[in-house]
Length: 550
Image (cartoon, rainbow, N blue to C red):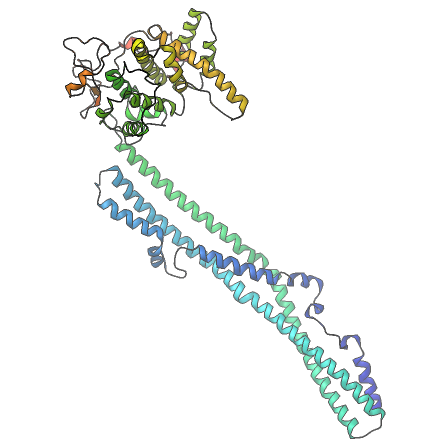
């Protein structure tokens, strides 16, 4: 009887499912769960890494309430600094108003940022932390438990196999106490093996359930990262909306403080600004840097040798440009350096976004240069001038009339129309560059010669193209300097007994007198008269097309 029992146990132990070969947890899972299992550990690392880096991006104290968080933000510190600063300034000054508005918008941005970070913590950081610190570790811990149970099961099976062999050997030698003890040991090991096997099955079922649950929740886990982008987008939209609203209000308030009269200084620099914008903002007909420089040169630079050709000192030129850009009326100190004045005028022309003679008419100007017949060239120059926008026409006429007057002193200043055109032409007209390839640069170099020819012709035919005299002090802002010593400066023409000595112009601090005939009855520039309204427009007959763009 005992022999048969041992034989049956040995057959059971020899069954493939009960072999002593060590099993792994992965051998107990179907193929689909094996693929899911491979994503558990990377998902845990991703959730942990992203949440850690995301938390480092927060500027506020993690977990703090709204008010406490806002106070700790750098933007709120910036807002407070602006608040302290504008208190020390005049409340009506543009700087004070800008700082006050800046204080409000920085405070608003700080609150938006705090709301963004709180939403980020609640909807992204907390779920990611829970995923990496709780949900996925539970699954991995169950896998570890299953692997331990399988290892225990493999150990018991090995011991049971060895005990069965020992019992078989004892039975073969005959019945006795040893055989009975071996049989009892086998029974105990078998019970233990059954118990461990039951635990393995139970743990395996739980682990498989965890894997299936993870599979169904993967879309939810992915939504955390999508939610992150949504919250960021909402934050940037709110911030941009607040900035746009504040900027619109600030610009409107700022524009109301800008001067509308030519006599008042502008709060915006004039260099690099389009001619139309500059004239419109100051209510001028002639650009301020052009008129100021021309008036100074008329006072003390008409007989200066190499004017516009010789370079000025960099520091003086920079100071003069800064004075002109700010609308300063402190120009007396520059009368003794006409080369700096000429350099400031050249810089203004070159820094215009569009040349004074315009990109649109570039080809027409170049075509004029190719004409050999004098009458045809003059007619073409008149036609092209008439097509200029009114602002460009007025300022070109003003400048060319001045250059023609400068050329009258060519025996002294050595600046013939040709020499003037060489140094100033490229600052009045240049092609619109779209690429920087060598071929186009070569063409631009060739066309610059034609530009010089056109500008030279404009200077030579100034009286024909722009008939009448020009009152160069067109805005009424410039008067002869108080210092009579400036009377030693080179005059433009012989002075009449009633005329004051010509000198360096200065910007007056009073009101604009450009529209008061009595206030301007005495010309500020010698030897020039004001044009009549009929003489101020383009000389060519105007057509409907010509009138439309003016």
